[in-house]
Length: 154
Image 1 (spheres, one colour):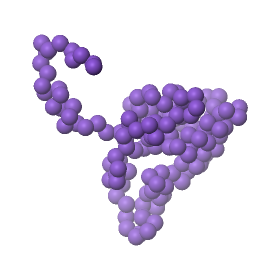
Image 2 (cartoon, rainbow, N blue to C red):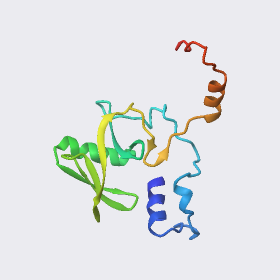
Image 3 (cartoon, one colour):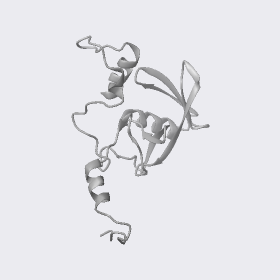
Image 4 (tube, one colour):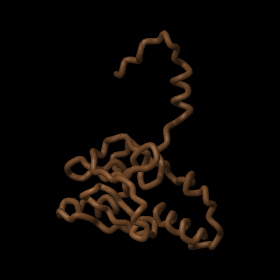
């Protein structure tokens, strides 16, 4: 999975199968076999109450992967104050009192977390960015003029 590859790439920079070097920018723009679809119900799957777990990144929120979200939700509903997580080969602690996560070996590096509706805008899931069809958006924008009234949302 992507998070396992990310952990390997960050720690040893070599593929576990062929031992070739993994390009540092590979994690920024991975070659996906199937692009994630933000409208896909499975990826936006919420817990029974419609909520999901997110962590803060630059300029937005990322949804946690399914396994990590399940671990967070189980601990949160059990009333524990924190939860240990293994993400991309690193141990993290999620603190529900302060709603932050930190690496166990670097506790000063923290990021905010939140439990929110699964339908909120998000950057992607677990580091895999949602993309929009730029050509489609460009075509729509180029066909507009300032004098055009807003389109009727049918």
